[in-house]
Image (cartoon, rainbow, N blue to C red):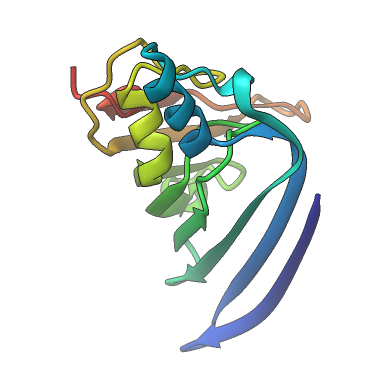
Length: 186
C-alpha cells in the first residue's frame, strides 16, 4: 500500500483550520467484482469473489478532510472519499464513496473543559460494480445476504466524551442511527 497525505493549515477570521488531501493505491490478492459477475452469468449461479482472485490487483482512492474552528468552543468538519470500487475490499469496511459533515462542541461551554461532544451525518455508497455483484447474490467480507435492494447508507451519530474524575481516563458513549444498513433497503 502506498499513501500520500498533504496537509495545509489555514485561518478564517482568526480561527484555526486545516485541509488534508490523501491519495492511495493498494495492491493485494483481491477478486474483481465484474469478473465474478461474468463467470456467474456463464455458470448460472451467484457470483463468488474468491473464484476470480488475482495477486497484485489494485484499488485506487482519494479523500479530503476539512476541519475548521467556528470559535473557541465549536468546530466543524467535512470529509469525502472515493475509491474505484472495482476490486474487493480487503480491510476496514465495504465503502466505495462517503461524505460526512459534523460539529464538535468543547466542554468549556458547560463548564467541563476536558469533555467534548459531537454530531455527524454520514452517507456511504458503493460503486456500480460492487453494487451489481451484491445484487446478483454475491457476498463481501462483511456484507451480503444473497439479495440486495440497494440504497445508500445514511448514518446519524452523536457522542459525548467525558473525563472520569482526576484520572487520565476518558469514556465516550456513542449513539448511531443507521438507515439502510449494509446498503440494503430491506
